[in-house]
Image 1 (tube, rainbow, N blue to C red):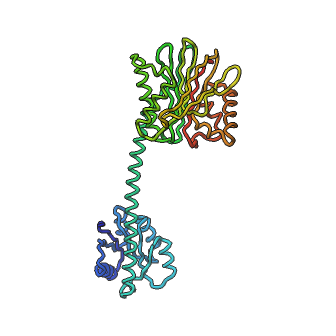
Image 2: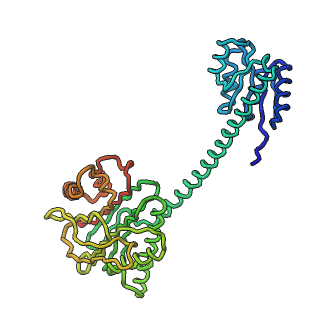
Image 3: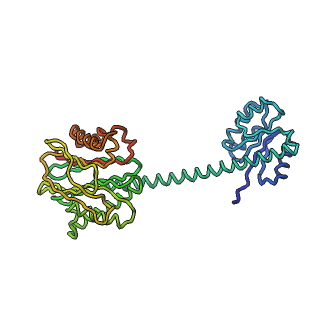
Length: 391
């Protein structure tokens, strides 16, 4: 693999030293470009606007910290110091503290042994400088990729948010629907939807795609498209699957399998029938079950079903219930269970019911915060809370 010719900045006030360094590099067949500076200001001016692989610079006790200033301009690439006093331990220490990677005495460079040692050192630091340059290029490339990824995720977030229903909706017979979504990453694998089919029916669901992040968020787009297609079929009377929650789950299950993405989801789907004042619902492996709060207290809905998108012939139980005069139905994604602290699943479920009863709120954010035992910004999983209530 070929590399570009590296530049070495050589700063020294003695032309004999400069000539010796040139001769050593030429004899060693070093493919480097050597630039010379004969004063501190000349060296600093060059480094202020140019980069080089290695600096070979005079270190003189008469020039207080000039080497450090050169090193600051040259960092993080290596610097070799040339001492003007042989064997001066104090000057050697000062050079190392000011950033020198190696130290040589110009008078000794005239010997073959010390000259060879200088070339070995220079080769080592040229290799290190090349690594520094490559790492900088990798970093810049990574930063560019991250910036592009962030822009892509921002666009994806806007698409996902536009697919969501309004955060608060009023339905027939005084029912109010509201929700909040809290992603653990930038994008969410949790998704909610609520569609008014006509004056009689309104459909809603909460889905939790396996995993989280961009791949799971992509499945929410597919889910929205699937349910939109079922709604359109209903509106043109070509299919009535949307009126049967279990049939809707079956359709979504088959289409997820057909995509071959290896993704599945859990889902609770309900259908309000305002003419009969009932709720028909089905469960696709969803946990925890929704909490129904009435004047008699809080309890989980009953029902069972398999996850959506895993099995060719799944089972989804469909149930129907009469709606109480006053109620709230709260649907959670399983991310809320991660926020309930320690304890068994039975203890967490009991706490879920108790907090819903105590709060008796239609504000999903308030309920989420009341349940969380830590900041939701540290949530390990997406959290979705949807409340459908008739106060």
